[in-house]
Length: 328
Image (cartoon, rainbow, N blue to C red; front, side, top):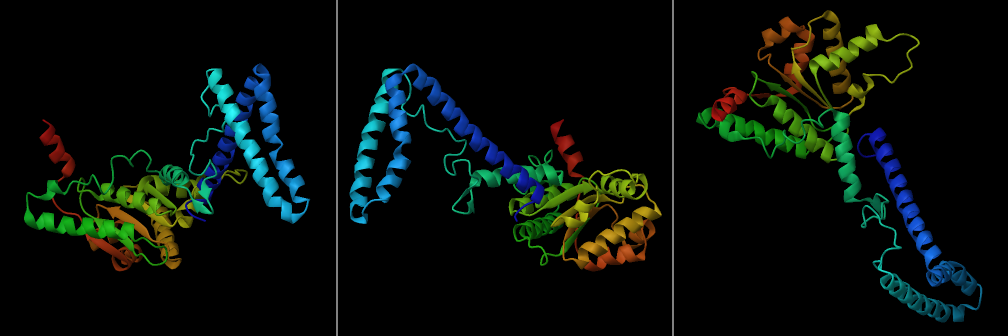
């Protein structure tokens, strides 16, 4: 099943409701107008009898079926023509009695002959952004609005950042669970790590994958709650299952969370489990050297991050500060 199962189920239920509501509104409009216009009511009753008439015709000789159906269609055409005339005579548009679907392409089914309609895919992508935790960033963090011109002050910096941008974009556009590697974004603050992390998450969601994005601080707070805060009587949904279940997990600002032995254990288990199940991660961090990672966590974590993640070094000047200076 594409996307997150919970999102898919919720959007599917939304479509079922909106179609039912569209039919109900049409029936209410039809009843109200038929109560006012007796001739229209008679036409509607005759048109409603089309199904039973075709069924009755099908019970007769097969040789006569085609002619009878043609006759029914002809009579229906005249009834519909008169129906439209009555609506026009009374000041209503000719489609007043029709069911008004939100999407006329799929008629609020969400799919067409088993193929997902573009309208449903848009809703699932929007739901995916929210589930991932990037709905507040999606509009401002994309590959399209990542401005490489801020790195042009130095040709070497620009060349390396352009290379990283192109590779990360290609990674997201070709993402496949079990095939795509995990990525490690290294560099100081304000160099674009968060921007490209969110941009990658967006594109992977648009490819119908289940993505979770979060800061290291928030993610490990969930793990600490599950380990130390949840009571035995608490039957609420687990806060941490999603970090293992999602197709792509994006951890931003690793190294900014409170340093504890528990956090190191949580991180090692998370990385080890996801790598073992072929589920990629994107991790960004200000820790740019092996020594810094070993000091912050331990050799096991540093070995996984530096040995099994594809690294991208973000360099240059703080883009946020450059933007601030330009705005003055």
